[in-house]
Amino acid sequence: MDRELGDEVIVVGGGVVGLTTAVVLAEGGRRVRVWARESGERTTSAVAGALWWPYRIEPERLVGDWALESLAVYEELAARPEETGVRLVEGVHDGLRLDALGPWAARVPGLADTDEGLSARLPLIDMPVHLAWLRERLGKAGGTVEEREVGGLGEVPAAVVVNCTGLGARSLVPDPAVRPVRGQLVLVENPGISTWYGAAEEPAGGPEGGSEGSVSTYFFPQPGGLLLGGTAQEDAWSLEPDPEIAAGIVARCAAVRPEIAGARVLGHRVGLRPYRDAVRLESELLPDGRVLVHNYGHGGAGVTVAWGCARQAAGLVEPGPAA
Image 1 (cartoon, rainbow, N blue to C red):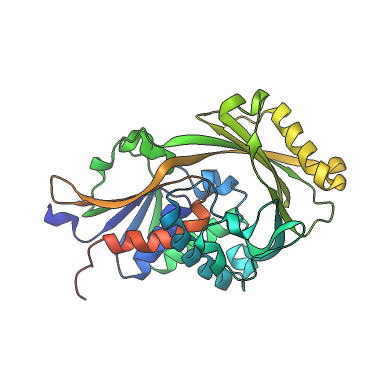
Image 2 (image 1 turned 135 degrees about the horizontal axis):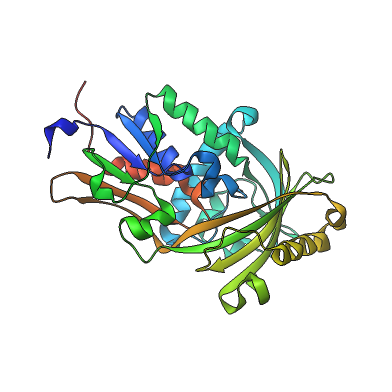
């Protein structure tokens, strides 16, 4: 290994997974820089609905522990919602029952079957605020964030490189197993709804993606308005909102809460979830002796597992030099 590289860690990727991983490393005593192709406000994380829930992420046997570890952090952060962007909000998963979930569900406080579905008080995260808070927390720990384009992970000049590039890993690793699952959302003026709602996905035809896509119905009350969703279009790359899809989203949500039908539309959001058959969380030794840690492929649950995965990734980084 090049001795001039020292003990610095460079985290590639500035979304919620990359920033959280960088915070854990920096607070653990490492010198950390984040290289981000885009600033936090322009990442996929920034447009996420961001309800804590293990959605479209595998493998289930590992996801439960990552999610529960993250849940404990968010419950603490919810004491300072204006600062952290995290609130605990009541809601219901329509048609879902506890016995349909994995063992992790029994360890979620307050998760209970009701006549309406599965009721819970869960973290709901205002992502622009949360991403800004993560960057500030990283700065207080001595870390920095730089906007930089990376052509390949091998060109990153650090003793340890942590790959949190999400969908970017498809070309940077390269790993063709990482695929986009397109999600479209509509932001409307909140007509007075204070609880979140979610219903199971179902196959969709037409513009939502034909046999390869699905739609779901959900709404999340965020400080800037009511966020309506959504879609899951596999292998779809367009970031342009589709008006027909948007109209379908509003109609489905209004079927649950009629007052949504007349709500003024404030904006549209599109994000590409970085789905993989299994999250890649492992380390490898590069030919020159440097360490490359992978932490990507979190699908639609990057926020949900961010802290659990960050701590495991940090554990794969060799301990820094003694002070």
